[in-house]
Structure formats: structure tokens, C-alpha cells
Amino acid sequence: MIDLKEIRNKITKKENFYFLTIIIFIFFIDRYSKIEIINNFSQNNFYINEYLNLSLTWNTGIGFGLLSSDSTLLYNLTSSLIAFVIFVLFYFAIKAKKNEKFVFSLIIGGAIGNFYDRLIFNAVPDFIDLHFNNFHWFTFNVADIFISFGIIIYLIMGIKLSK
Image (cartoon, rainbow, N blue to C red; front, side, top):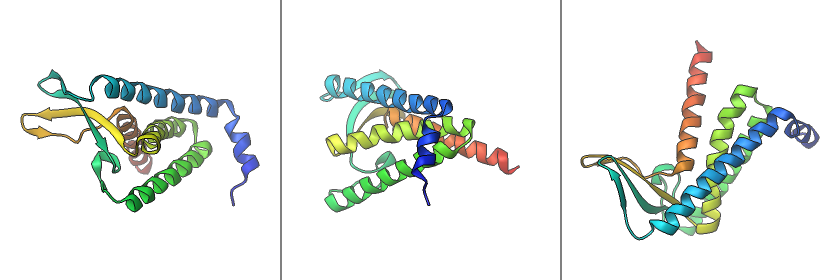
């Protein structure tokens, strides 16, 4: 059973304050980047070089456009699942060791940024388009970068611990 008093005591610890600060920082970096793209690049593509474009697309699915659908029911179910996952990650982060807190903060900060967009816009603005010749990677955003780095670091930590 979840003890809310214990969770409140853990949240107020100094190490958790840093963890929350990182989450808030990531959220605001993500918000700033998306606001700039929406306000300045919504009608056209901006070509930075032969490998990188800024091109706004709206993603109604989860990471990399998976589960995109016009179904309101699927969208709401997916959004509810994402909210649940964020709360579970937050719970694990509070109970985690210091080095794990940083990793969880990367994932949670990005996830909250994308979840905010789902609530406000009913879609997530993706705009970073990496490509080589005719091969284009999935269009993504700053939040996705933090989520991906957090997951990669977490997997590497798990592999090192299992050895």
C-alpha cells in the first residue's frame, strides 16, 4: 500500500528537490522550443543543412507517431495510460537512488512536456527532422530527446548492474 506521508517526506528531501528542478527545467526548455516552432515555423520548413530540417508536424500518437489514430477513444485511452505511467515513474523516482533520480528526471521531464501538449493541443508538435538522402528518421521534439536519453542511460545502467 502507498503511504502518502512517506512520499511527502521523501519529496521534501534535498536530493528530490534537485530531481524536481531538473524536471521543471526540461519542461520549460521543451515548452520554449515548441512555442518558437509553432510561432515561427508552422507554415514552412527551415533547412539547416543537408541532414537537419525544422518541419512542424502534429503527432496524435505516442513516441515516433506510434498508435496515431483519429479515434477519440484510442487517443483518450492512450493519454490516460501516459498519465498513469508518469505517476508510476514519479513514484519510482522518489524511491530511487540518487543516480537513478537523474535518469528518471530526464524521462519524466520530457514525458510531462509531451503530455502537456496532448492536453492543450490534442497532439504533440514534432519538428526535428533528421535525414540522410531519402531516409528520414521519425520527426521528434526536445522532450523526445530527453525521454530517449533517459531510457538509454537507464538501460545501460541496468546492463552494467547485471554483469
